[in-house]
Amino acid sequence: MKKLAYRSVGALSGMLGGFISGMIFKQVWKVAAGKGDAPQATSSQYGWGELLVAAAIQGAIFGVVKAAIDRATAEGIHNATGTWPGD
Image (cartoon, rainbow, N blue to C red; front, side):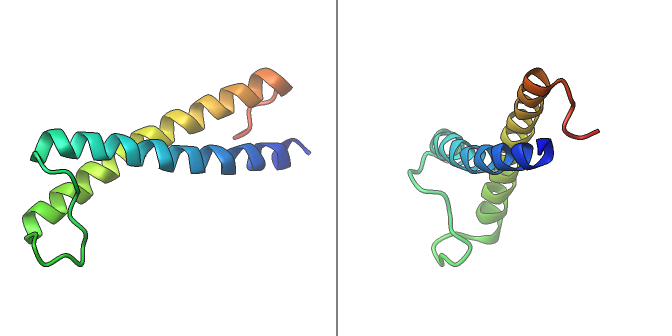
């Protein structure tokens, strides 16, 4: 039952993490590149360099946000149940 609860909370926190990291990335990209929208992989108006830098920044932000939310979720489950979800 505890694993099911953690998976449910984990799925919701994953969606929240994706939303939050997307918002952070948009703001970082505006500051870093001085442009409103980040390049899309299929857009012809951006070169490889700009595309790959944008993807690297986006991936780093997503990784940090995901790790922070996963850790906070695990601590919340631990505090509520007394069991660490990864053990």
